[in-house]
Image (tube, rainbow, N blue to C red; front, top):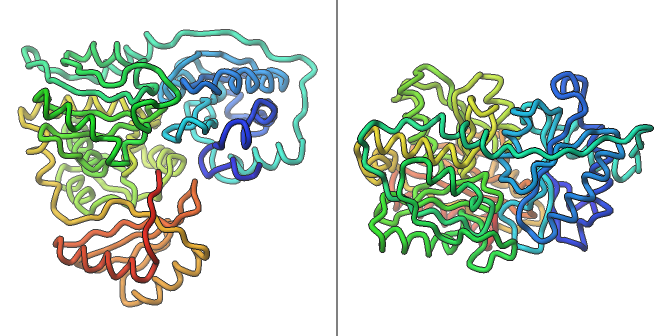
Length: 456
C-alpha cells in the first residue's frame, strides 16, 4: 500500500492498490493534516470533487464517508477540474479540499490531490508522509458527532473568476483555437472557452475515463498528433492540449509546432509583467536559461525553484510573486490563490496574442535561444550513486543540489533528478548550439544508461 503515497498526492491502480476501504481511511486521516490556521479560515468545511474515471464516484463516496465520520463537513461540488477544486476551497472559505483524480495517468489508475485552506498544498512531513503514517498506524479517530454533507455548484462563480482575467481589445478578431480535451475534465470548461470570444474547434469533448482516443498526457508527443493535424487542417491560431484533470495546458503554435511549457512561462510572464513590472516570477529548474533571461528583460525578478506544485506554490507565496510555471505545463497565478489553473494560462496566451497582434510562432521565436532535450527518463537502481558519479565526472562545473543535481557550464547545463512519482531518473540538457547539445546528451546517456519511455 505504501506505493500509493507520492510526493504530492495519492495515486495507484484501482482496485488493487487503491480502493474504497483505503479511500475511507484517507478521509478519516485527513483531519490530521488540518491545523488551527486551516480551521480558523474554514471551520470544519472540506470541499470534495472528482474526475470522470469510472472509479472516481465510488472512491469519492468512500472518501466522504471517512471525512464525515471524522467530524468534518463536506461540500460536494461533484465533477470538477482540479483547478475548480482549488477555486472552490478559497471561494467557499473551506479548511481544505480533496480532488479524486489520477491526473494524466491511464484509466486503471486513480488517486487524490489534497489541499489546505486557500488551496495551499499539503507539503513536507505534515503532508502525504503524515497521511501515510496515520493510515498505516490506524490512528483514525471517529468523531462523537459526524459531519454533514452538502452540495454546491461553483461553476458559474469559477467562470466569472476565469473570465475576469480576459483582456480582449474591442473589435479584436475572434481567434480560432483547437482544444483537445482528451475526453478528460477540460470538457466541462467548454462554456468558459466559448465565452472568451474565440472560435472553438473541439477535439474529444466527451467525458470518458477510459481515454478512448489517447492518454490525457500532453507531455507525450504522440498524444498531440491529432491536435497538431487539426490546427494545420483548420488554419487555427493556436492549439491547446488538456491533461486528465485539466490542471495542465500544453500549447501548439499556428504552424503545428509544440511550444515548450517553459517558454510559455516566459511569454505569460512578459504579458503579466507589462501590467505589473518588478514582480517575482517563478520557473522550475528544468526550464531553458532563456526563461530567466526573458523575465529579466521584461522587468521581472526570476526565481528558480525545484519541481513540484507544493514547492512552487509555497515559494510564490513567500515572494508574493506574480506568476510561476513548470515544464510539465502547470501555471500558477497570484490572483488565483497562488494555485495552478490551466484555463487561466489559455486566457493569458490569448491576451498576449490580441495585445501584440503577432502569431504565436513569432512571439515564441525570441525565446528559442538554445538547443534543449525533452525530459528524458532512465531506470536507475542506485539513483544517489548515479548522482554522485555525475558530480565526480563534472567536478569542474558549477553544481547545485536543489533538485537532484544541476551541472552548469557557460555554454551548456543539465539537470538529473529522481522522479517524485516513478522509479526513474530524469534528464534535461541544454546547450548553446544543437551540435553541442547532442554531444553532451550522448555523453550523459553513456554515463547513465539507455533511456526509457516514461510519463510525467
